[in-house]
Amino acid sequence: MNIFEESKKFIPGGVNSPVRAFGSVGGEPVIIKKGEGSKIYDIDGKEYIDYVCSWGPLILGHSDYRVVKKLKEVIENGTSFGAPTELELELAKLVVDYVPSIEMVRMVNSGTEAVMSAIRLARAYTNRKKIIKFEGCYHGHSDSLLVKAGSGALTFNQPSSPGVPEEFAKLTLIADYNDIESVKKLFMENKGEIACVIIEPVAGNMGVVLPKDGFLKELEELCKNEGALLIFDEIITGFRLSKGGAQEYFGINPDLTTLGKIIGGGLPVGAYGGKKEIMEMVSPVGPVYQAGTLSGNPLAMAAGIETLKILGEPGFYDNLRAKANKLWEGFGENLKRLNLKFAFNSIESMACMFFKDGQVESFKDAVQSDTKLFAEFFHKMLDKGVNLAPSQFEAMFVSMAHSDEDLEKTIKIHFETLKEMFG
Image (cartoon, rainbow, N blue to C red; front, top):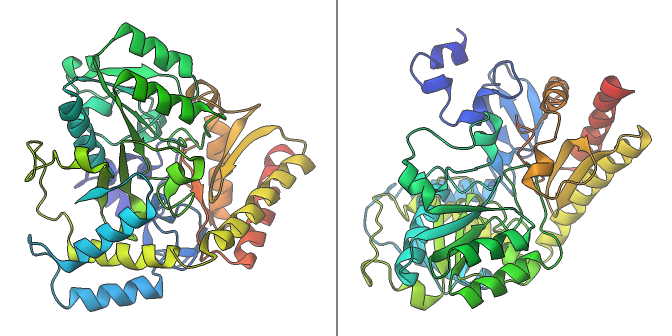
């Protein structure tokens, strides 16, 4: 039986998230049976070194024994209660302790839910309707944010989505990432109407695009001067760039932060948090309603607690950085040896190679990439046992489970693949 073909009879496109369908690279997706450490295994038993890491959450690797052990302990007591548990408090304390700007946090079930809730809160707090987002940044699939989105929407050449009312889209203003003047222009044209600016501090949904020096600091100051809240979408960068996320890494103090992925240790989870005076507007303390039956469920909380405790151990990020740098430097050396001028952006343990010459500093730069070349590269790497995200516009991630042997093998396969294509 062809599982993918059978799945298409019961699931739209055969997948539960569009990019998994291999739409931008062609062919049929690999059907995964299990993951262990740095590897995943398909239903035929083939092994792959995995740099998708479930799209970022698995910073410890697949099936980390400490997380699995904790989950087994917790599941014996039940999977969900719809009532408060001590685990919720324990994870909340860790988040507040780790992330500089967060004084209070609310747990939800996904990154989309976290962002949707944070924007509602920002609108209520400022009593304003309009928001600013950046072209190519993806913040989940809620209606207001499926305008000029990146990632999956980019992959399928649908930067917006049918079903999003024009009235919603009109309240979402689009700025250019890394261009502070484009943000100033929107503030000037919409004086006193902008509730918040939401940004991925490192864009991870148009490939990996780093902020220019001073850009985030200028954005912080501009929001403060204009009375708008600054929301950092740290669903990818949270606990990835450092224990305190991108805001600690770059020294920025956003008003609200959205989290996901790593905070759940591989289970479905999201969170939003920020200054106490803002967060106390959330029900039941304040008037801004948000609820969720499975929010704070014991399994996600336990996996998150165990993961964050490990991240807090001395030397964790130094060790992870050393692994990542070995891989990134190896890739860079391969490009030099083959005299290829492709852009390669990396920061800590996340990176992206763009199939275009020159720097990639914005959405407009990213979309100049040759996606056909990427598709060829992707399949050659996959055939040789290296699993990358099936889209030019996604990040690759290094985990603590990746061994020196994994990294060296990947560098070798990377060189062989590019040599086949361009040598």
